[in-house]
Length: 84
Image (cartoon, rainbow, N blue to C red; front, side, top):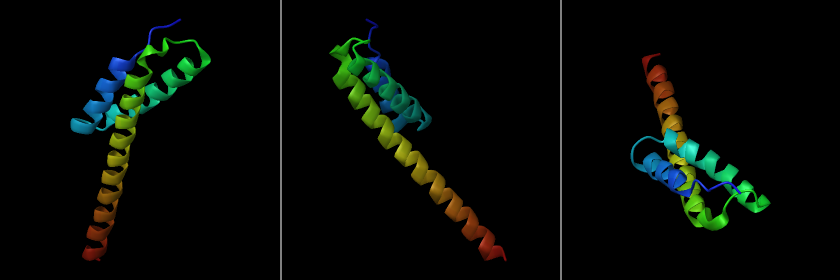
């Protein structure tokens, strides 16, 4: 059985919230993979709670990133329309 990566995923999720949202994408992806492996019995399930928490932080960080990108695109379009 492979060891879990719960602490790494949790740290990435927290870094995604406070430093750079790209860490959130990594936390979400890694969390999904590890939870699937745990469900299949191929990975140590003792880190399930930590992995889940990191995955949720990653989801939130990714949502913030998407929101920021949408706001920037809307602002860029508004600036272009104001110049016309």
